[in-house]
Image 1 (tube, rainbow, N blue to C red):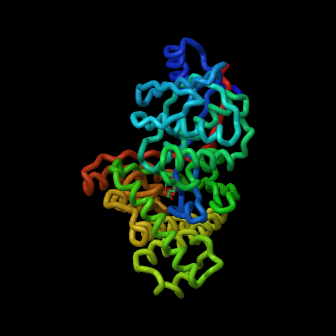
Image 2: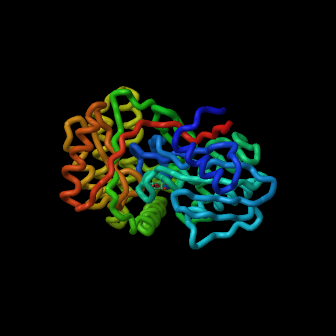
Image 3: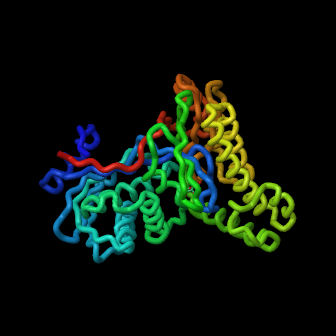
Length: 394
Ligand code: GLA
């Protein structure tokens, strides 16, 4: 498919000419995501409901005849070259590791890749809970597959798994499958209900009476990684203890709230609260899908508010900054509901709002949030966008 280039791609094409003295053949894009509901459920085999963002990471590329991959990142103003036969983690250039990890993961799948030249850049705020890393992995995957003439050979779900593997095993971040999955398979004007056990998915239309506003706390997420791993471990502990009386369960996905209450005494208090969040959050995702399908946005908003409360009080992954952001959003009459999105501890919150109320929500955030936190936030209005795409440059 070829189309007119927008200003961002034009700039990358110009930069490509400057760096490599040639014109690129393709542009590949991987979008970021915002999760509407279903937080910390993906690694518990549960349900999630993200949408892909209009913001993305882009590569303009030109295949090479050898095995060399020459990269230039506009955002880091830094180049990096590696050989497809000698992939090795680079302690100084984290961004390049996502790309190397992706190449390694595709090759391990038996795909013959070829070298390429690439200039890349993104407009997803980094380390903000909007999955700039997954977007980078997916844009890189599409770039490698396209250069090798293999675009479309992998099922979208498999591509998402390979990207998750790159992040888990090469980059060393223990994430679930949600971010990569939505970056590949997102659809304009739709959220994606993903069953993170079977990897079945279903498009859920976002009603036209709903708009999305994202508030970036711009607060540090320094604890996020270790706390994320700790939460995963607490969930596994809960499953292990519950299996003694519920031998049929494999993960928290299989536990009902009645079962959890019946066996509550078997669990340390904190583990119980973690399980309570996951079990109730899975139910909320399914209720949210029904509410969106029925155009019942008050119920959808109430479920998002309940999700935030549960993440704050039971899963304990919110922060004073995120709570202040969500309070500001919820204070506006046109806001149906709001919650933290992504792993938590900082990053972003998302609000479901009546179209026309976006500005009022933004005003409330700029008015209220800095008073509590002393931090100047950012606000993005977004609609649900398409997943990854490759376009030929003519
Ligand atoms: C991060 C991870 C996802 C998911 C969320 C929490 O974004 O990358 O896999 O676990 O946190 O819902």
